[in-house]
Amino acid sequence: MLIAWPASLPQKPVRGFSMAEEDNVDRFDSDYGPPLTMRRSTSAGRTYSVIFVMTNAQKATFRDWYKTTLRDGLFPFWFAGPDDHQPGRWIMTGPPQYSAIGAKWQVSLEIYRYP
Image (tube, rainbow, N blue to C red; front, side):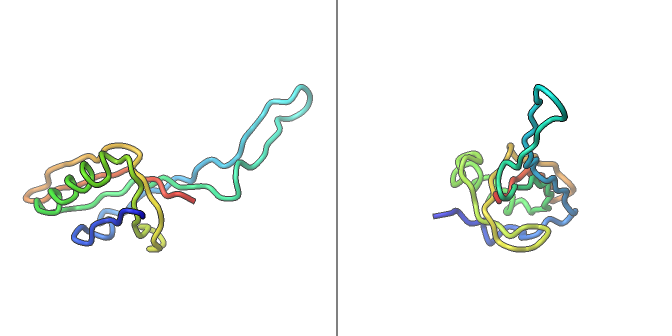
C-alpha cells in the first residue's frame, strides 16, 4: 500500500515549481563511426523542485510524516503532480529544507515522479 500525502498539508506548491526530465537515452562510443544511442525504457521519470508555505502546525505534521511515516524519505508516497494535478507515485530525492518567513515556514522539496 502506498503512503498518501497528508490531507492537512498544502496540496499545491504556492511559489511555482521547476521540473527536469530524466535522461532516457544511453550513449555508447563505437569503434568506428558516430556514438550509438538507445532508449533506456519506454518512459522516464521527472524530478521536481517544489516550495510549500506551511503554518507551524502543518510543518510539525509534515516533519512527523517525513521522519516517521516515510522513514526520512525512504518510502515512496502518493501525491497529485504540481503540473498535471494527476495522482502519481513519488519519492523524496533529498531531505526537506525549512526557511522561516514571518509566522510561517517555507518548505522546499526535491521530489521524483516515477514513470
